[in-house]
Length: 93
Picture 1 (cartoon, rainbow, N blue to C red):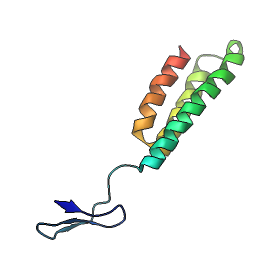
Picture 2: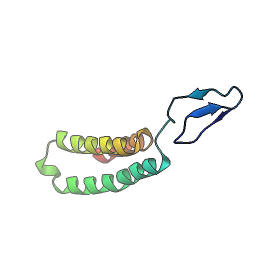
Picture 3: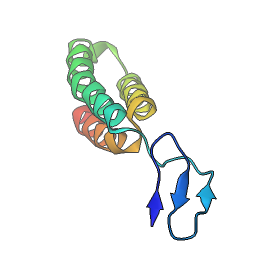
Picture 4: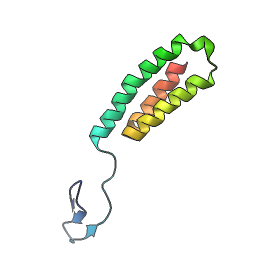
């Protein structure tokens, strides 16, 4: 059985072995923040691109949505980035 906190090393209570490995994953707060960025960013970007869609080639909206997805991934990690990518793909269609 392992014991340890987010700041300290993990300790095996049976053998007393300490592991130098950091905890896995991003904090829930950052994941929620990434989901919020996606939830606000996708509709805003979609509304902005709809107004100028006749003046743009297809590559521009794709790159703008990709930029948003990369930003969501940087803030919140993979969990909010995958739904943002799927939602962005649907918004492009």
